[in-house]
Image (cartoon, rainbow, N blue to C red; front, side):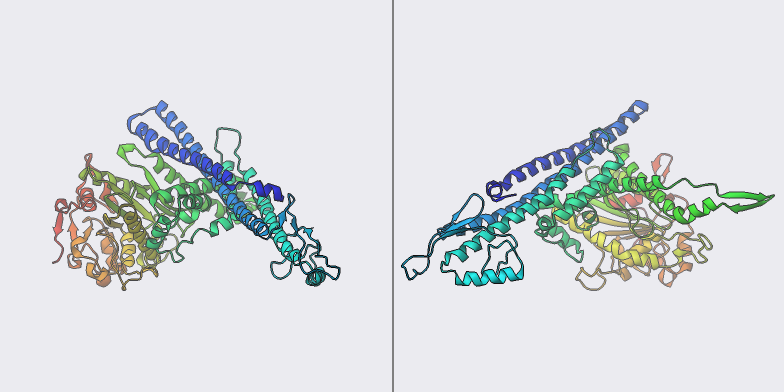
Length: 629
């Protein structure tokens, strides 16, 4: 990069190219949504058979192609905008230096040197000191007299300063100032060019129609490279709230320009994906990118682990010993292999939910939270329908033994709740969310998983996960209000130990909240299903209105009674006890997980009661006992 090139450079041309790439990215995003959420969903709902299955597979592959185009073109757009920003900053400095030089009557030459006129006091012969020409150096100090010497050593600078002090033409020193400002601007532009040229060249895809694991791994690498190079560009974006306050986060996002939002989506999908208060559509887009990249990375790592070798060798009759090969594999690979298998199985479950869109009118899925290695069991937060715009939103918290590998069972419960709630109020929009972001107890009975005392006896995991649930609920409320200007109707549902998490969340005020201690949960209704206890003996203890606290437990479900013994219910009182003071709903199902079952192809009363609360049809909810007045 030289003076003439920078002088003629038009950063707007790079920004125009960035707009073009962003338009392609947006088009690919819309195409992906059309393929996955409309075309494939309609086919899923109406067509069956091998041909339909094959067509759906091809459509999903096409959706992946569009997703990859969206991500890579978004990166290209952000890279070009960031590069243009760097060039614009350098060019602004150049133009300022040139303008100042011209104002002094100096001439800036085609090579960036500055010519200055004669000036100063006449000498003994009556001659005015002659003018001259100077070239700047980029690493010259901006303070004090500047030097045109090529040597930047301290000695050379000292000699040059002394020479400048004796120069009879004062224009020389001023010309040097402008020349060095020009040189520094050119150097900044050259450094930007050297930084961005390889980054832009790396943004290319394989010449085929298959988006492979290697492509997604490469996309993640590209993201890291562009994010590092775009530091100055991103520094100009006002930082999101440091304490994670969802309401401030929602306001922060709304205050960003479209270009800034798109840059952050391209460069920080993991950060946006877990930021409570952001729109569900933004978090879904970010988390789907994280999911695709993580799946590719973990699959490659799993494929690199060698197969498990023969475990035993026979030493004689009824005598075996571990083989040396298996022991070496066991110590080096087994634990990681199990972790990766669990993570990949969980990601399969998420993908299967995406594929179920359209089945029995199931709406699009929004991946609001995802991390296969968060907590000890992973993080999965998926919404059926957009919670930001729904008339009624329900957040469902699953119980013990839930992990990312078994999350499909919990997603099914949430989907069932969506269908039944939507059928009760077909003219209203409903969103049901599965929230799993805590370490669910792995054992509920003694001596299971080496636990002498079952983990579910204690409140530890609930207390640890409660602040995250509270923050999510605050974020869900903030995102809805930001999108609609209204609160909407919301219900919080817990099953089994999930109700204990709710109980602890009701007692938690996150640091950002700023309210009085134990501010009520930001929901309209709370519902407990088969609760072993909520660490409280009444809704009032949780800061909740008894008229909007609902509980159900089947007569043959032993968990509520077990919870009394375990101590999760304060004073051995659980929500389904009359003395707790909740609305106790009728049930017609059996067992600990039958509350979402159908009976004779009809929704059970247990299920329709839950749906009635979700959509605010309280008069339709069958009760054993009214809430205490």
